[in-house]
Image (tube, rainbow, N blue to C red):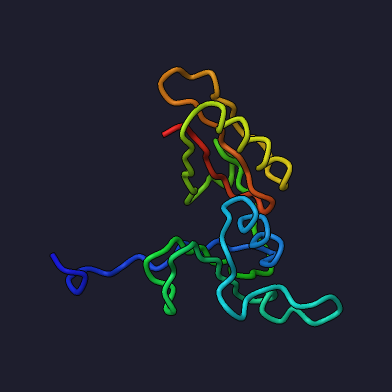
Length: 147
């Protein structure tokens, strides 16, 4: 099969009531960079793009954003908080992030919580797959685990 035979995944998009704040969280957590033009404005300037749609890209992104990790943030008026693992608003999507070992997992747990994530589930002591499930500042679940 060639790339003309199937659609290509361009990016994952997260809805949020504060696109700039959530983009900043993931920029710091994942070491991504803004798509040209999506960077935060200078102090005192209007953040028009931050009220609509922002894109972060990983290293190696071409001019069209291809060939690298991309995550976008879409501003919405309201968003119910996910109630994972059960409840009225279960998750519909989550991000899986991996690290190389248990020490790195602890470091990344600490980084994530310092950046504003909260731990939803601590499975660090699982001998087969140590992991943490977090909620990002907008409430979207994501996992960090040892690959």
